[in-house]
Length: 231
Image (cartoon, rainbow, N blue to C red; front, side):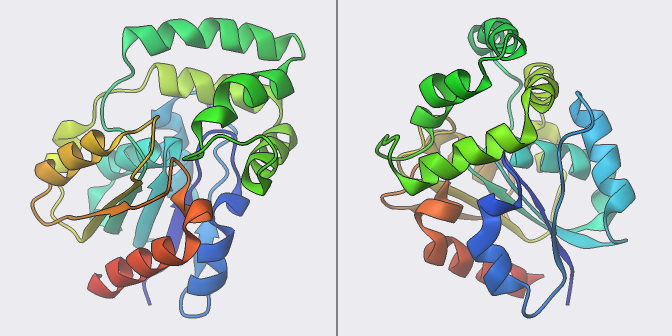
């Protein structure tokens, strides 16, 4: 079986994919990379490739999907299949870039929990709810990673390149998946990616937001299973 490498979203760890790891690891080697040591997509992708099997299926959510595209750009021959979940192939727009500096400054001044709770996490779920267990988990993951990782990941996202040409050149089995109510990476972005890759399959999960791996775990796992069977 082709090994599977997960790439998590910003300030997330393997717990983001816990339902999928539990279900899929029975039949293949499954790993989740730590996106913590570098502050550019190019350097993060090089680190993923140093630690990954020679050839592997690659699935990334949000920042992890953005990084997956950079991994694909650097070593397309090693990516047996690609799953892009709730992500964006475009470079960051100036309006969003402008918000990074104040967020970084706040986190460096000891306000990581506040930035996550007030700015980041409310955009994750289809219906924002700070008492939801998923919101609590997201805060736990962020605090475990800490402010240095927040700064590095923010810089990597801020300075990322457009990857539309990278996607156009890939012909392997591809799943493009998102939650119907994703406010950060809306359905239109996924329709764009699907259009760039004629071989891809688009799955929009009803009722889910930016984190379908946790909001709609069974449906997400089913879509990933179907994709892996195509590889």
